[in-house]
Image (cartoon, rainbow, N blue to C red; front, side):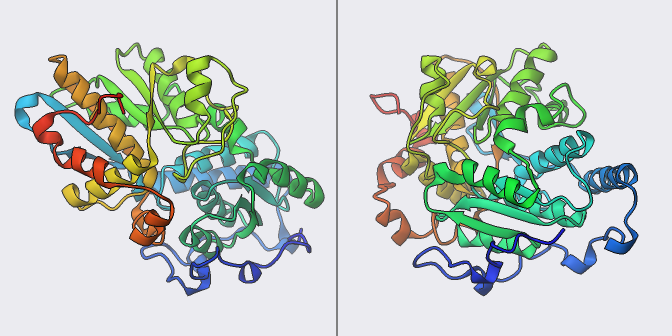
Length: 404
């Protein structure tokens, strides 16, 4: 089935104002060229649907087998504190982010549910990283892919989606990506993958090499093998649902903390017990939503922390300065939350470990979070948060008098 005729070709889409067009960006290093990936049979020789599905599942599973587990890095803290902080580096996945796991699970869920065939266009609503990963898997299966994204999505992410053969359909209002995705799927006879609905059920939370099982396996020989806290953000809510359920299923005493950026609905929805809460949306790409998404499961979350956007950006830059690891804004949100909990543990005289995630690499945000002019234009003052971070090993706390 051909791509919808009313959708613009990737080269026809304007770049966000003031930013370079995706075509001017280099292809991501270390990623296979389209010609290096295996292809499905030519259109004239397609297999029957069940055979095609079986082959598609095999290809997705084979991709997982080729990918080694992601690294667990130690963040430096004073040894006398007796607290260890680990960052699980999800940026080393083939498509460069935590969303590679989700995209793989969503494709397997759709394939085994009978929603995808050899000619099914795939549509997804995304802030960018999930769309990058889904474009990768769509190309692996020979399917067309359209990403419906906010117009403010970074040009680096747009370039990656197009590198994998996807098309980018940009909308001015981020809240409109859901309705527009439904419309395009209906018009093209395609399948709306709908990560925000299916993320919490597409992943096997009992184990089967999910991210929670991986964390505990990698901690097995550490001095605090069962962490006191796991800290994650929420975009779809799928990662927090998987980890929270796994902790209960395996009867671990570990607690789950979800960090939420300014402008997101998750914190208020969780604290009020109201799934109908809405907000303006988040400036931290990948996490924080204008509504409480269907895949967010508040009952598995032990606590939530609201993190100012300036703190998130300051923390991601602090990570670069301390470890040399360039990561994205959502990683900064995670790190701020994790260090906040480390400070609380220290104040309470507790020892143990805390785990959080490096969600994606910082190369996708060269023109935003790592650009001082962009940060200033957003009205973000990083200085007070950067000072707290720099003094953390001396003060042992990030929190001001108001608890932020």
